[in-house]
Length: 251
Image (cartoon, rainbow, N blue to C red; front, top):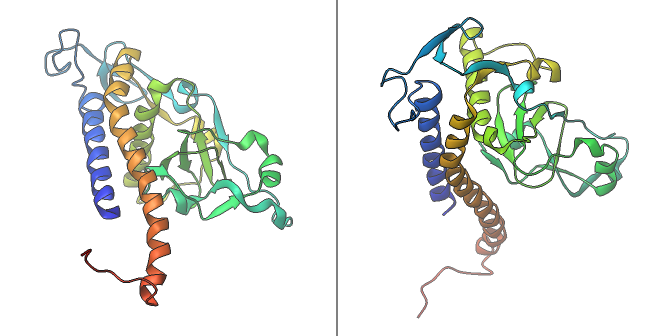
């Protein structure tokens, strides 16, 4: 069941990514008549910052201009062991790797540990991006959490930006790695905020959000289901191994 959920999630994200590419890379989002914009002769204008033609009315922008609330994580003092081992998820690079939604973390903070840096709390659906050591891993928060200093997170004030930014940020880092042979300098908050990306029209963002939302919600639900299935598996396996329980057919 866990493996099946993972396959379903991969397909759901691939569907959202295909639509993203079709609309925001190939520029064939629906025009006023519901036809593919660029293919149907929609006007394109050259943007010198992005160094390519983009639809008329669209522009270049930065991550920080689109969503100004960006949080750089921090680790509470390790000299105080009472700050760790509580119920507050503490996200690190490994927790994001391979996960669209971050449903569990290797480390946690206590309420007192998290309270030392209250301004570092991230609400659900914040976008975590690794910017040091393994730059470019991207994942959504599923419950109020904090991160370490290797992660910058975007707290979206306008929900229509959320899924667009997820793919735009991933695309930026994939492109940067391709251009620089997989190594490029670590990014601080200012560098991250200044990343230049395409800013589509609000209408296109709104329309994409409506299409992507149900796909990402299904991914979130199946990711949370897997978290419970992993707990159940890890509880059952030792008992199966030592013979406390057996697998058989019901009579």
